[in-house]
Image (cartoon, rainbow over all chains, first blue to last red; front, top):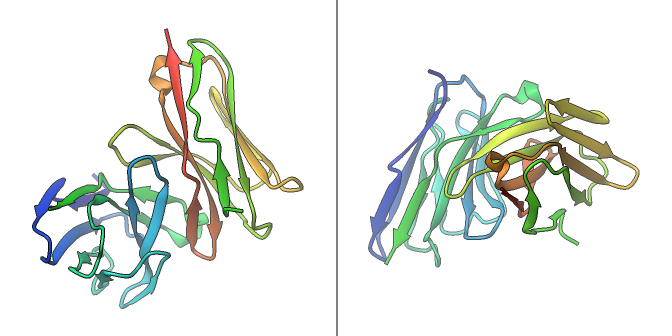
Length: 113
Length: 108
């Protein structure tokens, strides 16, 4: 089955710890994205990558880091510098030939206490 | 003005009703637009893509008005299962800009 997987579904961490969220896709999509969603809010773009070994900051990149070493994988690290890390994190991918229709993974709910 | 604006609702409608949501955008250069459906605590799922004036898929119709810079979603014969949040998005140089979503509650 083709799709996007994110793990884990729920993640709990103590304040001050870095945490890495996994995102893998087998859709052969070039572009991948990370979003954050807070309760009652829309999606805010954290980072995106349109090609391997290249990525750009989105609207709220501070306190986050990414890497894109493989086409299939785009992990997101939430660092201790992120002031309000508790949120629902969504990964998406798109085929640039389809006007950037994006398809989402199931998300990771991160709770930091 | 936000880049993509939606009335958050909620829109409460009876089963079988026709309901329409509007989504306004501020960048006239946008080429493509999307409607996503998001169920509570789940990921958004692509509902419709709009590249020209509109698109129709069964009970769902999306209309794009470039002159007035809005895109609408019409749902006919609402079902209980249509209850969800509907997000609109516009393309912007390889990224999507999302609205905050409109919540629909379909009542028996």
